[in-house]
Length: 250
Image: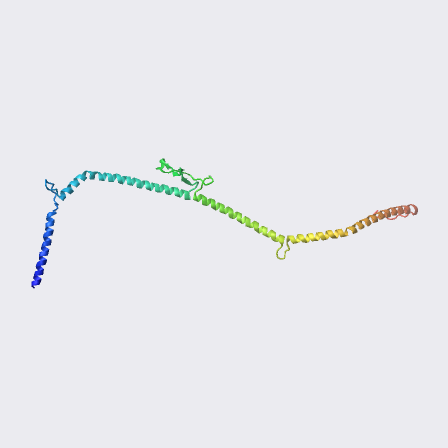
């Protein structure tokens, strides 16, 4: 019990010392939180310093709402301009995509876009030109032109396919197909037949010459015989009073 009492007394003495040190520090470093002004040997309180700061800043606080109103009006104007710019840019994009006529592009000077002061200092637009210097159509115009060109190409392709089919048919007719020998084979056959006829003609030419000569001889003899028959008919008619019928060939 004696030891416990001694320990408690020591703990009490230690706590008391710490409280005394803390109280001395508060007293030595005392902070005046009052609104009293400064004196000859003592500065003013903390509340007095805050009041002085408020009084100093109070004249400037009156202009803050007016500046805020001006800033709010400026921001509203800029947002309105931004909305109008967004609408204008969207209209130009829609024109270049779905509009009719020529496309538009930003006019440049020294690779910098030129501004149009009559249109809210937005980029100045001019008719777009292709690389060859011709007017550049919008995307819708280019799509329409491409469809027309594709239709022309398809029409020409169909016509070409028809011509190729006709050429194949003519080739088949010339070269032959299945049971048809073809024009080339027929021409070769006709040429061979003509050569055979020519050879046959050349072979028969001497016979024709002989037949022609014999025909001439027969005709001369027939003519002579007809003359003799006429003389005999005249003789019989004059001498013997006999009238013979006249031959149709005389």
